[in-house]
Image (cartoon, rainbow, N blue to C red; front, side):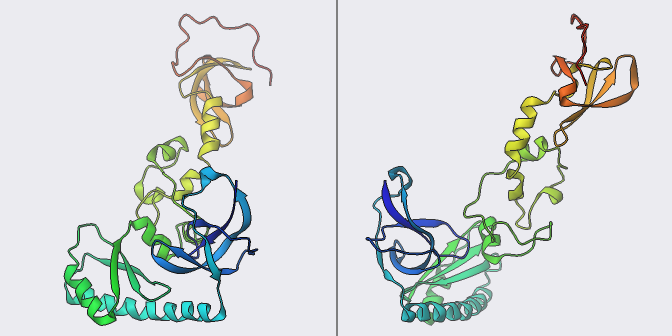
Length: 287
């Protein structure tokens, strides 16, 4: 076990562990730490805690110092410079005819020795001349970093089709894999417009209830299963995973399906839809 604090460098970003060096930090404190990008000012998201060695990316770097008022003033000034740099970069992109680039965000390093420009693009972009032009303007190290559309939406923020702010810009520290299989198991429309977010990718919220659906699928009969109900045998015509009910077309009344709770039916043959060779029990499931 190791004593660490968790530091976040963006409002809704990944939390990184640092050695507090016997100092006590509270959530919301600001600290100066050394990262692969140089000196950075971050906010404490996890106060002093003990974590297992497996959770730590070694070598574990230490906190340089607690942020002072002067440090926080530098951070505030950098935020103002970022907006100016964003506008200048937009103009330079237009001047160089790089219409395929969509500038998303700009970040100034804490010490001002580097500026990062984040952009999205569907094609490979030759931005060498753009970098040279930006370096002449800002006279510091310039880095252009291409990011995915999901990361771009996380940085920009906005409202989803549910009317609420993007989950990724509110509380998701990292993205989780989402597949079309999840939409199928949840009986959702496979229309890409209805199950995709503003970023154009499958909505992250498909993952939220997936475990519950997978558990229900294991317990519920499949479509076309041959089952025994309190009213007699029949075939499952529809399954509602949320309500945990099934619609069954009874053998003696196949024209109208009847609804039963999962606990009321007994599966005699899973997914086959046939009673051939199956002995029907005399005792029917109790209601």
